[in-house]
Every structure is written in C-alpha cells, then in structure tokens.
Length: 264
Image (cartoon, rainbow, N blue to C red; front, side):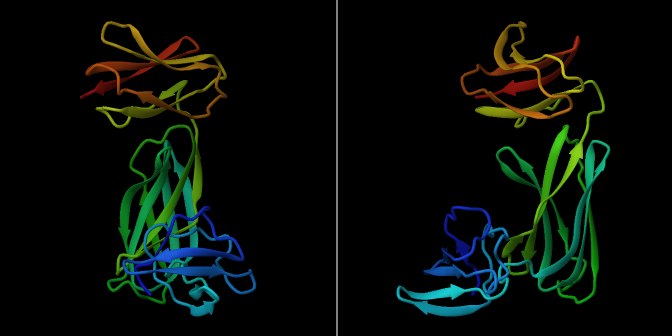
C-alpha cells in the first residue's frame, strides 16, 4: 500500500503493543505494532508524511488491520553510517549506504525552534535509484551555526515521493569570539523573529531591542547565562511600528548588534 500517513500519533517513536491509525485519500486502517519479538519498529521514528507499507494484513474484532512483521517503514536504503563533524562555525555531514531501492535522494534537515528546516537536497548517486553496491554522500552546511548543540537528520525521498526519516546526529559548535549574536530571522519581520546569543565567559548579559532614537523598546534577556551556551530568543514585533530597530547584546564591557526591520 502506498500513500499512507499516520494520523496524529501521541509520540514520535513506535512503542510496543500499540495500535495506531493510518490513512490514505480513501480510507483509514488500524496499524498494530506488536512486541519486540515480532517487529523491528519499536523505538524507530514514526514517519512524517506519506510512506509505503509492506507487511501482513490481519483481522481483529474491529475489522482489518495492518500488522508489520518487519520494518516496513524503515529507509528503503541501508545506512551504514551517518555523522556530523564540526567545520569551524559550521558542519559537514557524511553518510554511506550499503544498498538502495527506488531512492531519489535525501533532504538534509536542521532542527530549529519552530521545527525542522530543510537545508538542501542530495540526489542519489545511482541513475535509477537502485543498487546493491555501497554509495557515499557528503553535505557541507553553508551557513554559520551559533554556539551550542545542533541536530541534523535525513529525509529519504523515494522515486514515488514517499519519505522516511533517519535517526538524528548532532555536533557541538563553540564560540570564536567573546560574544555571539545571530541575525534575527525572518528579517524583515511582521509578527515575530528569533535569534540566538552566547557569551564566552559566565558574565552578566543584557539583550534588548532599541529604536532609531536609541530608546529601549524590548528587553529580551537579563541575567548570567552559562559560558558558551547558545540561547534562543523570540522578538515579538506584532505591535511595533514599521521601521528599523537594533538588537543589542551587552556583556563583559563588550557590545554586539544586529539590525531588525519591522514591516506591516
């Protein structure tokens, strides 16, 4: 069965002896995950988006149900390694496959406060997406990452456009200077923007938004953050007049600023 998707699961990974609901454009079915001796799904991430089911169709008192007796939602490729390595203030991701079946390629995703963001797409190295030979892939993150822990994952895409997620990898990015203040995003902003900051030493820090007259219009943070630990902040801009503002980080006698434009 193709084009199935899970309906609002309560958790992000499969647990044993639980029945989920899957649906396509025409109908919905029970999806029964049995104990660990009957399926390889327990602890695996529940797919986001559509997937292809291969397995047993069973019958219970309530009607027909899908009973996966093998990892029908696993990647249609066999990953033999997926790593993230720090590259200055960025990262390099590498992975290998032992085999691929109908594989169009991989979307590389980076975890953000609001969810997972796609960084780019790496196509399969095989023309028809199917091979029994090992393949190698590499993706360079072409952006400056703020201090802290950054998590990445692969969204494998089939030739029929169904997708499945890999496990996550992470990389720790340290500071290159005394202060770090990222550019707000989105910028321009009409409702809210997010940014991150960090300080190299455990000193008192102040992050605030100022208008063009130098008046403080938002206090985003006041305190003593842990050293070299990135913190994410949200700037609510929905009630600010249109114009140019300055986000200012002050700590340890040093200052760093970023421009923020508010539009209506």
